[in-house]
Image (cartoon, rainbow, N blue to C red):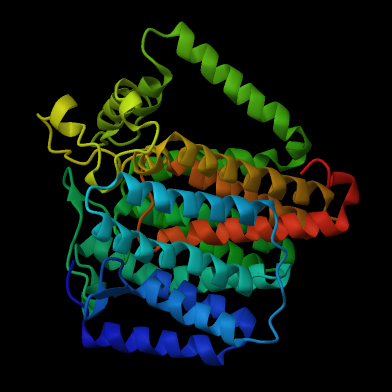
Length: 430
């Protein structure tokens, strides 16, 4: 990554100032603009502070939330409790397990701003279905603007975000892997896939042109990122969107997938993760075999990380299990394992339960919504969360895409609140 350029600092300053003078519902627009157009990994350094784009905006946002005396109080529900429990418990376990207490504490404080502060600001910004639609339309506009940059990068091997400080081009196997402002090509492709259900939902609100155009743009981004993970996630996303008519059978689908997976696992000579990572590969240059080795190492080393993980030191499994490869990383290709090796099984369990509850509550909201447009909006968000969960199997989230994950969870929390209020018959089910 390069250093922050004067243009980067100017754009960052404009977005930060906008946080304080726009309406409450428009705060999300500034966050989305920063996520899409300010390169991840570049930061403004003030003394010992490392202020990345989304982090600085989260700080400005939390000040806006505290200063807004007329703000509407959001219901603190199951999703919120799970999110904060996961973040806070993970914070203390990571610091406890680290050898360098002070460095680990400072690092996790920065991550707390990126997660907890940002989530609070998102909950403050997203308080109605109209706010969700504004966010989706903002993403659609940003995707349109991004496409020319992506095309130049993909066809001419030049990243135009060099003007903001980004100075890398990702090429593997002779194929350009477009990243735009994102930290990695897989993350950029996953970002596009996750948004596609929401863009499709715009059709139900009469935004056909915007919907079709943004879907085409996202499809091109998936192709341009040249990665297997987003392509597989896209196929799964299309399947779950097509499942809309039978969403009441979601529990049956869930247990069918679990049962089928267990059956395949026990009838094959190799475990199911060998099938997922080694046999199912769209790109010849995919690092699926490394992901398979990672799962194997996590199982063999289970008793070394299950309680509190490894903290800041990391597992370093590559030195023991695949020292002959270039892949020195040991956890960034599986988000679930990253959570586990940083915070143990309990933290991983909280994270998985959080993801499950978000999907479940959004599904229930879709079933009980009166208008078909609202049904599609909630279902599209549920599929977006499913897309995240599938992508977690191939890459760990870091950088600005984490904001999209927290936004999905915040929408799930809103759906849960409205479900509690409007559907007393489902209150006990939640």
